[in-house]
Structure formats: structure tokens, C-alpha cells
Image 1 (spheres, rainbow, N blue to C red):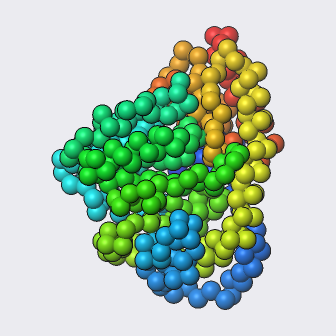
Image 2: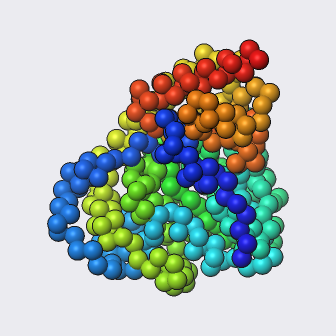
Image 3: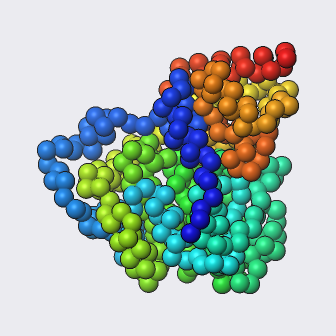
Length: 370
């Protein structure tokens, strides 16, 4: 297997701890370990660092299953959502398979699909439709013989949530073609307003869900994710995990089962939504004051905004200049196959966000004056 370079992950992992202001993240400011232990009333002295149950403890799988009205034997706990996505694609795809990816999207799944020898076809989200697919596009692209359709909902990088009509069309197209649907729902729970984003789970017998504590929960360092799949497929996916990380971290499993207790989960998501709702007006106000330069649709979920800019400079070059000249890290649209866009995270503490935007403003003024 030869995987293409994962440009965004290498960009972030190389520089995110080497800049003054990191606006490349798509989650909110993470909790400290102390905040987490206090929140869940966990004494580290009570946790024995042994091998845990390899598919996740019974209690953890029960808590995850309850989020989807599923059963514990549908769930495998993983080391982050990335492992969940990996074992799903590794299990389902072979050389020459056809994959339809709803794009723009997080680059792991289409990149890995190509590495496994699949043909990847884009089902585009259209900005003028509110980052929704065109009506009928799913049935046109998800043709007989398609093995897998991949969707991230809420979406990364746009922060858009698929409409009910779009979800129904995608599911119907998968059923008509006999395709599996992989729905990465890692941003569910981080909505700007309204109820939690509906899941694809239960809409078809060939749906697999992935999620994690990284984005909506502000706990990426726990590296605790999961997949939810039909029982027979779940056994196959669990078997693949025996060849990767074997078991989630014992500490992460213990913390996750407490975080996902209903009352605690509500408090955690309230924290996330509070950060998003407090910071989005700061970012939106900054963009709105520069309408001649920036065009964006406010995100519906996640601490990310996907913005089009009017400067005559490539997005990678612009992001590199922000990094080297202003010590601010953002994600260039090139990493999503779309030049003249930036993905800007706004989950930082408000004072950090404002200071970072001041530095971006300085570079924009310099470029316009040149």
C-alpha cells in the first residue's frame, strides 16, 4: 500500500506547537488534565495501567451505543477517530474499488482509499447552496458497483450540516447501488445553535459511524474514538484492530466512560458550545469588516470557518507567510483541493483569537499595499 502524503496533518503536526497562535485546529481549546480529572471525579491512583478490553470496556461501549440508539455489540472503541476510519477502509476496500467522497472533506479517508488502490470520485458540496450537494448529484455519482461512500457530517472544513433531504438522497443512492456508507460524525455535538446533528445510524443496514472525543468534547489528547457498525461487520472491524493498537489506553477508557455519562456529557458539550458561540461573533465581525477581501458562510457546527479570500496569492503561500512572518498557523485551501480558501479555527481563548486576527490583518494590509 502506497498512501499519498497527508499534507494537512503533516503541516499541523510540524508547526502547531511552533507558532504563537495556532488557528489550524478544528476543535475548541482542550481541557487540561486537571480540569478533566476534576470534572469526572477521577483519582489517577485508582487506575491500573494494564491492558484494557481491546474493543473498549463494557461500560464504555454501552455509553457510546446510547448516543446512537444502538447496542454495545455494534461498538468498537478505538485510538482516536483516525484509527476507526482506518480499520473501516482497510476492511472494506480493495484494488480497483470505486469510492465516492463528499468533498471538501478531511483528507484521511480519500487519501487512504487511494492508497488502498481505490478510485475516488468527488461528490461536491456547493458553496452557493450553503455547502450542500446539488439535488440528484448523489444518485448520478453513486453508481452500481460503488463500494463505499464517505461523508463527514457536520463537515470539515466548512462547518456545514447536511440537510435532511441531502442525507436522504445519499442514503437512497447507497442502497440503490449496494454501497456502504461511512459517516464520520466527529463534530456532532458542537453545533452553534439548535439540536444535535442527526446521525446517519439506523438509516440503512450498510452504515458505519465513526466518532471521537477530540472535536466536540475538547479532549483530543485522550485519543479515544469509536466506530458503530452492524454486528457482523463490527466483528470484522474489531479483528482488524487486533493488528493495529489492540486496545484503547486504560486511562482514556476510564475517563471516556465518565465523560459520556449523560449529565457529564451535557456539561462538556455546553462548554464546547459556549466557546463556539462566544468566539464566532469575534471572527465574523473581523471578516465582516473586510467584506471586500473575504467571503464566508458562518459554520453551523465546529470551531472552524472556511473562507474565500480575494488576494492574488496561492493559499499555501499565504499560509506559509502567516506562519513565518506573523507566527499564526491556519490551514490552506490547497489541503482540500481548493485554492483561494483558508480554514480558520476559532476555538482558542478569545484574547488569543483576537491577537491572531490582528496579525493576519497586518499581513493582509502589507499584501494589499505591495
